[in-house]
Image (cartoon, rainbow, N blue to C red; front, side, top):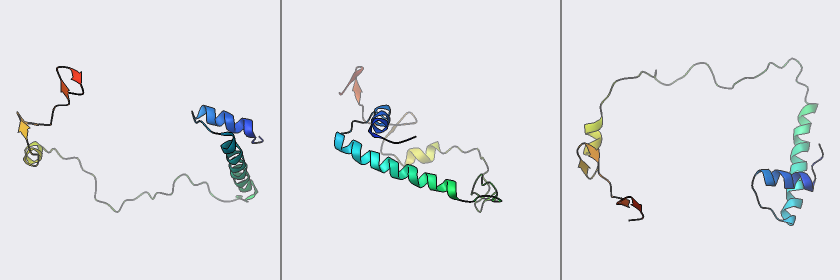
Length: 101
């Protein structure tokens, strides 16, 4: 598929981007360069190369992730400036249901 100014305008429109005529020319050249680089991959001989699904190993060097039951509410409430009835008290941002109070 050839990349031209119309294709760039279409992509910009789909992306909700406003671009100038000058930018259309720049992006057209950039997209052509990107497509050409990707097409170079077609020339690489991958015969006999196993498919790579992931580069992550099946083992971890971190500790085992074990769920534990913890109640840290008291510890948390000790670290905040103000509490009320077991909750963290913060400044009001609404007054009588009106925003911007």
